[in-house]
Amino acid sequence: MCANCRIAIFVVAYTACALAQEVGHDSPAFDVASVKVTQYRRPADGPLFSDVKIASPGRLVAINASLYECIEWAYQLREYQFSGPDWLKAGGANYDIEAKAPPETPPQQIRLMLQTLLTERFHMKVHRESITLAVYYLVIAKKGLKLQQATADARRGFNSEGGPAGVRMSSQKATMTGFGTG
Image (cartoon, rainbow, N blue to C red; front, side):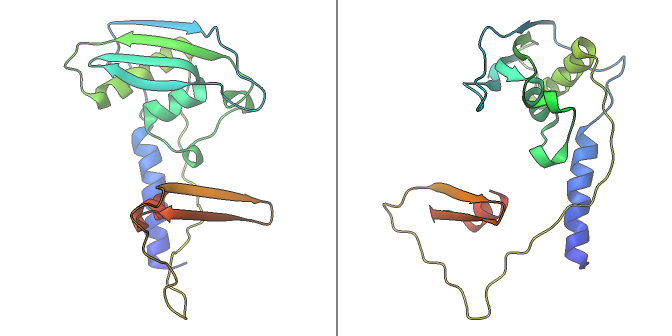
C-alpha cells in the first residue's frame, strides 16, 4: 500500500472517531426537546420526505427523520463511516424532533446536543473502531487527459448508473474537487 493510501485511511478513521464522542453527565443538552413518532409513513422504495436541520438560530428541527439520518447529522458522518442494526436504515420508526437552545448556540454545539438527546431518549451507545477502506486514485491516462471544458449552458451535477458489474458516472459541469468527493 502506498503512503498516500495510508494517509487517506487514517483521515477517514480519525474523522469517524473524533466526531463520535461519548456523551456524559457534562454533555450539552437542549433547553427543551420534543421527540414524536412521525405521522408520515415512508414507502417501501425509500423516503417520502425527511430533513434534519437548524431551522433558525438555536432551533433544531427533524421532520420524518430516521435515527440513521439523525446520527449522520449529529456526528457529521457519511454513510460509509458508521453502521448499526438493519432497522436503523429501513423499517424502523421515523421521528419529528423539535429542540431549542439559546439563539447564540453555535451549530457544532447543536450537533453535540443532538448526540446527547439520542443517548438519553433512545439509549444509543457509540462503539468506535478503525477499519481499512479502499482508496482510489484519480489519475490522467497514459494517452493524456480526455476531459473537455464545460460549456456555459451545461447543467451542473452528477449522473450515475450501474449495478454489480460496475458504475458509470457522468457530469456535464463539475469541478475536479466535486468529482473527487462527490
